[in-house]
Length: 229
Image (cartoon, rainbow, N blue to C red):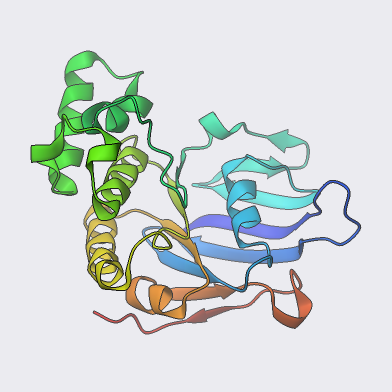
């Protein structure tokens, strides 16, 4: 079942004459994990921002879960897209505990259901014993799991991850990759992960979407990958 459609999107940074993304198209199935691979400056993070609604394409169409969120005069704002995002620096609120960070996007739920969902997320990422800790009291891997739990808590239709392993050392990176893939598969989350590291894609993703290279932004190609389990 096609869950995400990106069709002929284009984007140029203000003040530039050269498009960073030009005529890009791809589709994702429900619960698919795909990796966007390419060099720095190729437009990988820009693509995520376009999907999240943090930037507006110049042209094209974006559909998520059967609903057009951009195109033909339609623009759905970020908070109404059903998209979760894990940033490179995790962007945790330093003044909030782990539990309150996870609960941040659940303000529309009744208190009891909100508390239940936070407990479910803490269990999912195995941080039950750290619920009352603050971000500065956590390791890099623990901070990443909090960021993931916060993004998953509202049950997004699409999860976007921007270089999620860049702040981790090599040994921890391998362990966190395995944990992340397991969590995404257990939750059935559709995920698009941006990275410059082929090993990240090989360990987690079912498919690669290449961006950049000699013709940055032009006719980006998708290909199957063989995940390492």
